[in-house]
Amino acid sequence: MKDFRAELIKTIPPSGIRAFFDLVIGMKDVVSLGVGEPDFVTPWHICESAIFSIEKGMTSYTSNLGLLELRHAIADYLLRMFSVKYDPKQELIITVGASEAMDIAFRAVLNPGDEVIILEPSYVAYAPLVTLAGGVPVNISLIHGDELVVDFEKIESKITNKTKAIFINYPNNPTGKSFRKDELVRFALLAEKHDLLVVSDEIYGELTYDYDHICFSSLPGMKERTILISGFSKAFAMTGWRIGYAAAPHDVIEAMMKIHQYAMLCAPISGQIAAIAALERGNKDVKAMKKEYKRRRNIIVEGFNKLNLYCANPEGAFYVFPSIKRLPFSSEEFCIKLLNEEKVAVVPGTAFGSTGEGFIRCAYAASIENIKEALRRIKDFLQRHDAL
Image (cartoon, rainbow, N blue to C red; front, side, top):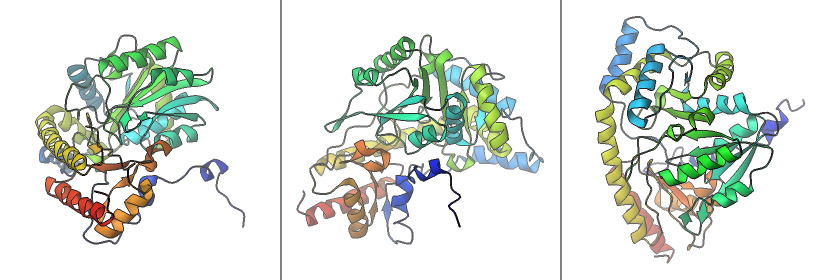
């Protein structure tokens, strides 16, 4: 029987995160720093609002664009938090997580062969989603030695007449790097100079620790050329609710809605109602979780540096990206050996692009107890291999 799979799909590798964590299945006593998911449960008042809505019989479809009440709440939130104004009726769409927002954004704007600049290391979905939309990802490394540096001259040298967009994610998964205003302004100048779209994934925007997050579309002249992507999974501990959103000019939202209405129809209504509660009464919860993440960040960064595995201080999200370049292992070899010998699960840097070789990603969305235990086991591992 012939192979019925599309040729394009055959060229796309499976997620490096999933491939690694298939190894973890069935293992006992594993301490995991691998999952990019808050270990907090969704605050009860958010859950309660969804439960109450179900009790009232609110189990129907919603508008393709999402509940208007939620779109109003998001518009109010973006204005209050990030000083950017969106029309809830024409410039916002509710999606099944931020992942769907990215998918339909690329499909809505890319023609075959259009190029999208992506900064690496980057979340595993970005380049495949560009490819699936018919575009061509152009990956540019942020890594200079053990540091993360944005080389704007290098980015500009990669812009061609086929370049349609620059994709940015900040704070970043897997590195925790964010961008200060001067860096964002330079991205904006590139976008204006070369008439480019900017797709900005700001799902971790609420989780910055040392300075306030600046929404890219709030910069002068950028709202008209930005697709802002965000959601509720990370800051509000609502990963399983699958509620995201995109904010963009009306014509782009309409194009995205065409795809969304045929592929998804609408996001789950109970999740949308929960999201309204999160925006209206969840600020206290976000502040508490953020405070705890900052404590964990400080502990894990100090721990890796004490082990002589250089670890830059992440500015946001809940990931660190320590260097293992001084060790006689590739990133994948290190992670497999660490898992088998010490039962500590971390992710190879190569899961986030080839430029991640020599690094590992560790999520500190885990208890302080588990973080300390993982660091203790990593120390034992290094001692066993004469690498302290």
